[in-house]
Amino acid sequence: MNHTMNKILLYLLALLPLGLSGCEEVIDYELRTDDTKLVVEGLITNQPGPYTVRLSTTKGYLEDGTTPGVNGALVVVSDNHGTADTLRTVGDGLYQTAKLQGTPGYTYYFKAVVNGATYTAQSFMPTVSPIDSLTFEYKQGGHMEDEGYYPIIHFRDPAGKGNYYRWNVYINDVLEPDELAVLNDDIYDGNYGHANMQFALEKGDRLKVELYGIDKPAYEFWIALLNQQNAAGGPFESTPANAPSNISNGAIGYFVASAVSVLEEEVR
Image 1 (tube, one colour):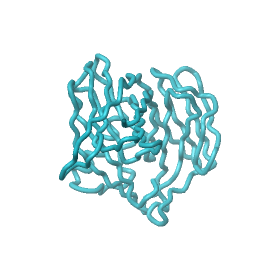
Image 2 (cartoon, one colour):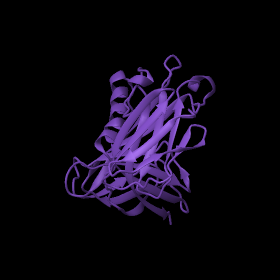
Image 3 (cartoon, helix red, strand yellow):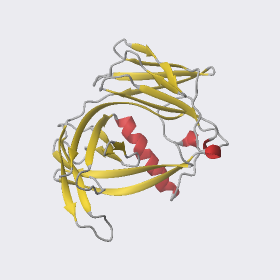
Image 4 (cartoon, one colour):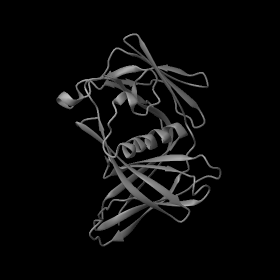
């Protein structure tokens, strides 16, 4: 959160067995100074650790564009197989694990004690199918789209409904924070999917895609953000306390456990 408005661009994609179409929504998430809240940002993956949790507050967000880190907290992340990890401070509001290793099929628990108040959350880490391949479709461009090579991500969804996904996209090793795709398998369960990304690349560009398997509450977190905006007919009219979150005690943000599949290709 580095700007007065934190814009989360969600591509909500209805992935069909033979293709995928998307509609673009922009959410302007405005934080207000009259209601200071704790902000939690935590991600546990099946990649080698350590993993990081950031604690901050909404105070000062509209004054100078920064979110002050919360230091001096007790932060513990544990799993349902007996491992508990007390995180160490590694920066302003940043806390890092020492021994935890993310494993698909495990449930992870977050606890933070800040100025005597306790905040908790939990997240289940589903498995994720490997990305099969990345291909590129050249389009000459027109009134509504740029000229260039549009990526297509190919992967197979496992049989059995209840799989949920999101993407991270890196172009030439730079994370594109405004590109977030959120998918479920209600339509394409068990099929080979082709996800068409809605941005153009040039020859020589390198694309890296991270496919995250997420649980249903994490998926519903992003859907709820869109539903809030659609109901209001514009930018959020609620305070941060009313925004969706899996953190207890009135905090905002999200703690999530995700298995990850990664693939990188160059446009040739």
